[in-house]
Length: 290
Image (cartoon, rainbow, N blue to C red; front, side, top):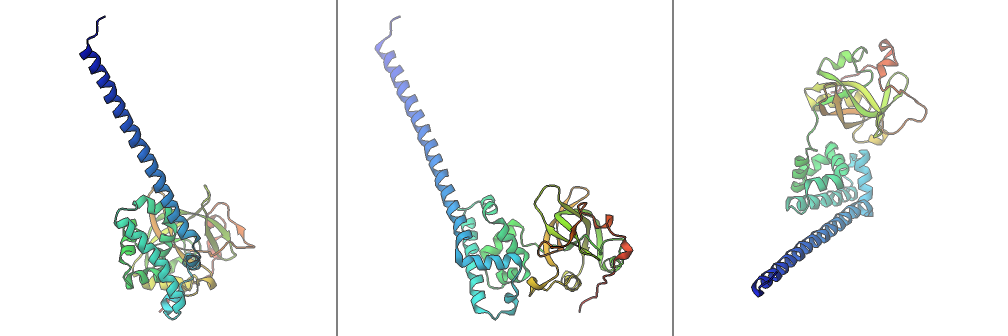
């Protein structure tokens, strides 16, 4: 078959064009691959800076366990300075998010837990708002971490069928039965629960809607022997939990959990205190606060 010079030239030109296109695609792929690597390295450095920086570690632990009574007392300038350093780190993270240098899902993946501990601590969250950590406040709102639940999850003697429930029903509206992730222990006249991330470890209880949130939480704090200023000395600690209702809906609520695993208490493997105790054996009576 006879091939003209023009045809051969066109074929060669097509090969050159195809090679150039493949080279461009390869360069773009390599660029994106390198960019992903660089971004992964940058995100890791950011993550490592927070978790390994000694100047942030002490305050991170305090906020984590709720040992933030110094915020309301407003006297210890050294601790308040450490809190400012801690919050300024997340103000910077929020600034990066606002400038679109960080994606929201990246913020969640790297810092979800410490941001949640900031949002669930009333004293620290109030400090964020009072001293104009505006970028951080906006990030918490975007993540929906700063929404204070108006609901209470109960799993012990405040449930229906126990005498103290009559007090709870006087100001709280029953929403439904539900469960939270956790382990339940028998402490004698009442139970106590700790959080758990293991599959199948759940605590059964009931969800209630509160009205006058501030006053009623103070009353419940007194009943559960929780002192927000000195959580380390408290019998229970009030924490936010995720409640799964029987219908499948998930809601945020307050619950009173043990600060640590009890040493000598028997675990209630069913997760349901009603299955263990005769309701009439419950004797703890709440006393309404001021």
